[in-house]
Amino acid sequence: MRNLKETSIEWALKHVRKFYDSDFYPKLFEFEAIEHNWIKVKEELLNIDLDEYAPQTPFICLAPKKNFTYRVVHQLDPIDTLLYTAILYEFSEKIENYRIPNEKSIACSYRIEPDIHGSFFGTDLDGYARFKSKSLELARENKNGFVLVCDITDFYNQIYLHRVTNVLEEAGVESPKILENFLSALNSNISRGVPVGPAASILVSEAIMADIDKKIISNTTSFTRYVDDMHVYFDTFEEASFFLHELTKYLYSNHRLVLSTEKTFIDNNKNFIENYFEDEESIEQEAIHQNLADTTESRYYDPYGFYIPEIPEFEDLESSAQFSVRSETYREIFERALQFEQIDLGIMRHLLRKAGKYKVRSILPLVFSNFRTLLPIIREIVVYLERVLNEKSVKTYKESFQAMLDDQLVQLPFVNIWIYTLLQNPVFNFIELQLDYSKILRVREKALIAKRLNDTTWIKDHKDGLDVLGPWDKRAILHSAIILSSDEIRHWAGLVSSRGNILDKSIASFVIAKKKRK
Image 1 (spheres, rainbow, N blue to C red):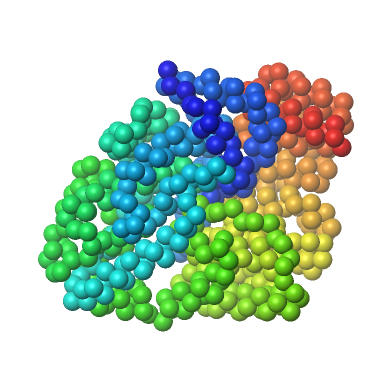
Image 2 (cartoon, rainbow, N blue to C red):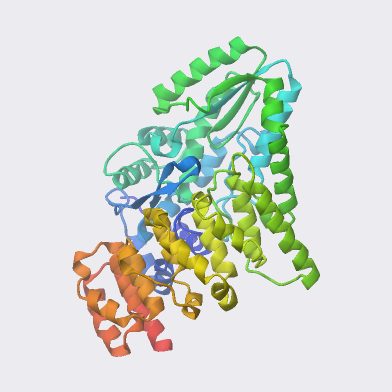
């Protein structure tokens, strides 16, 4: 029997409360309810036998990427999120110790250093910049040499779970099989793939990459990488070609991983420096990042869009003149970034976080007029809008919001979730939009919109049919029932609680307590 430690479970709650449970989906109200009922929830989590536990099937959706392609992304059941986070917290020290030391600037991504505030990673968040700097240094050291650039196809979804167990055993982790069993159950007993979105998955991926690093370093120390983006340097084309053959063989035979045909190539270092580091567009993009990076928080740039750090609440420390300069600068940068042949989504993410922090609204017209182009960063768009919208701005841009709702691409499930998450914001009570429940794809978002609209009729029509709904939809209706009368909530929520699991009980208890305070 294998149980989690209390300190690990406590840390997991800190993590999900301070950060998001997924880098792709909206923040869950369930964790506030869990915290409200924490003593009972923690007791249940402490008693779970991880050798026998079967997690719930995660919610899976396709998130838009650039070039109109899609990425499979996962959102775990809230209880499973806590368990997954706690498991990797217990494994974290061994995983980091298994990796190549940070000072060598080889494994530049996500150095694992859990802190008391719930972050998995250290405060040195400039890993991508270190990766590019180290790669440029290696290229300049041997301008007559060659570089092998490698990228693994669909990395997270192709990670072989049995190999994860083997690597963790090599790292000295006790009982690593519980993680394999947990992930396999999430995947309906398919032995491949880790969930895309939770920060805990980054630790699993870095454990696998640490094994691959050791294979590369047995041949050469002239390499660096960020996640699965590897740059390996050689004196001759032949050396690079032979090593690519060996690496391809190793990845397949040991990890069942395959290199991307489109993103894997050999180039001479002179061309690579010119095309990767010194082309006009790259220089301008780098200048934009430096321009934006004027606070500790914003120095962090992750081109993959994974693991978004906590953004502090806005504090108005600027004079009106300083704010005007910032506002105009952000608008100009946004316009410039839109003009690149390939839009740099990293710049857009970076800029939107900064603009949201400082309540800069000058880019709102550009966001609306480029809505389709920006769909790959719909998450950051919605988070930005939630930070800057007020009564005046929603009234000013009412027609733009309506046009956004009427866009046919809002019927893409992932986009639909985010747009109707935005529409749950009470600021939209200042305007009347033509909202059609039939265009909201999930019952979950319908329920939370009904809560904002104080639509008691919709809640009453659906509250007696909870037993036929999935858990995500069921919990949303229970949460939204706070708009009903106190007597009705107390009776109905109490009934649901008596028949439900610990999560249902937590939400029912939270809703009843919150109603009493009103």
